[in-house]
Length: 442
Image (cartoon, rainbow, N blue to C red):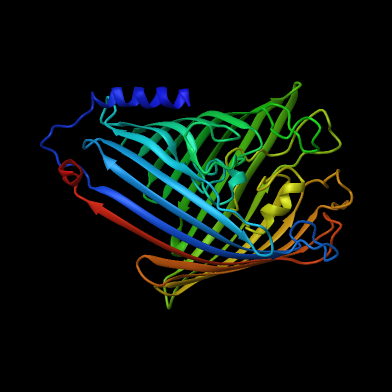
């Protein structure tokens, strides 16, 4: 908490030097409210077996309230609180905690017109979230925030971010109401990095990044089968997006990792993807997409070396809501590693208020999982996954979707029964914008 307080004080002090002339009009105050309701039902996604009863039916209620207040034309303060309660059908339930998901100061023209600074609790996403999005994988979809400081340099065709992150296993920087001591991740994480984005021309954009990350003080204890000793990982990578003729586009990203884990075990891993998309304008907006995603796996035959991809800040259901739960027995929830996936997808928007998507994944592993023989087989075929999603908009403030996923497991597992995941979601969200003078009048 002391670190965050010092950063906020420093930002506020610097902000006093960047205040715009009083004649400039302040941006409006924004107040937002969101209520999300999800009904989820799943079965066999932990062990792929009908012999055990792991079916779950639950309703998730998430409430968010936030505000962004302009202090001057260049300085903004934002704060938001979040609460999500899961009602598991047939089990005891309780009202969950309220936590701050946002609390930051943002400063434009930070000593220079090209610099801006954001300090505090904030959401961070770069690219498609392949390396940077999720800060709290263990609290589900409640929040994705990081405790961070981001200094951004803007030029005509590019931006350069300098990023610092510190995310403890349990929230200890800001107060919680009805505190439930929620675990946010297995260990404490800190990181320093840079992220560069440049528009090479009207049809090509390049992104490049370097992130140094530490993962330390695993909360599970040394006796736990999934315990991870302290480690540091350096991730270097790039992403290229190109608009091609006749409605085609291509996106590719690749990164390598080097580091070490106690005691002096070297880490050498890689991850990346590439896909091509073809968009159609008529009679309805639609597209087809095909690609490959790979994240290296740890070879059981080389115990003195770690080759498994570390998803650093990308432990979220990018490719599947179903599959993140099955990953728990390998390394941790939404821990994407040792994975090879081919994808084919078709999407269409038949109306302005509806979109449909159908996706197929052929999922494999680079190496069998050499532990827990009761759940894992000797093969590398994870399974075949099919997904169908319908999104809809009922009004300007009310929207939702229906999602269905199922997976037929392969010889990577001992279980052979199909698993499924079904979700219905409704979201009501509304924003109010008030003149900045409204606050002064009060």
